[in-house]
Length: 367
Image (tube, rainbow, N blue to C red; front, side, top):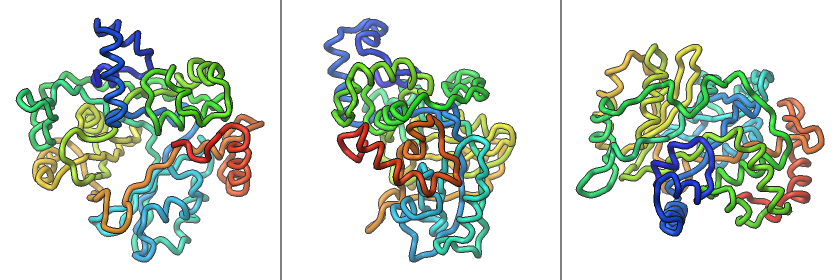
């Protein structure tokens, strides 16, 4: 069932899924509810199609400010931050993922970061524009242990990757449509997509059950069916199905970097983002310590240079090392139906949040 959902780039009605599988509707409903309760699957939308570009900033953080939650709220232009990941090794290396309006001057963000007291300027601040996202969409049946039913850990599972028929042309990431950005019709589209990224409902009919919108159910349904589906990347594997205690990140350059990133996204172990034109990619692998020697051997099989690598322990004793934020809907003009540019968002977004909460939401938290 999970594999069927992962294959699709859009949400489908549960009755449609049951018909495609040739299974009883009631049975499929029970399986879907079990998947939702375990939070195994999530949903993602394509930011590039929304008219946004993704920038990854690598910066060393001064020790006294090395807390991902603090950085997520206080880094320059934090209203555009998508995620913050703080490495354990090397110590205090931050991966800051920003969204920004297409063709805007991201240099103003970089300049502010370089002047920030949070950043250790003994180390260079690196910036990469990476717009091709390869989400985790594994062919799950290829990675299941026939005896236990559990997914193989990476040091076993990646050994069978060459047996999986994978073609980069099959990607659900719509690489060939990267020339079709389309700003969302209005703020409600962004609120719906942000909500669905937090609470994956499988079927659009379940969209209204969150009860947080001050909007009629039929209007929500209309917006999803006619607007939001355009941006959907479909279901993704949200968490590993095996013991994973760390995240391994690598920034790489080389002829095989995109191929490698796509291949990893077709396993249960990770995902990645790329600049296809320049062969830059960052991969994210969910591992345990015993997997590391094998992973290094695996990467050495490809024609790549690893420019930066890091290990992140998701939970430290007194702080969170990884923070994910919603789509930056607070930077979208309600009346103008456009993204604020970077220069104006700094003084507009706080007021905009108040208007959005007052007009559209029963709760200030989409979760």
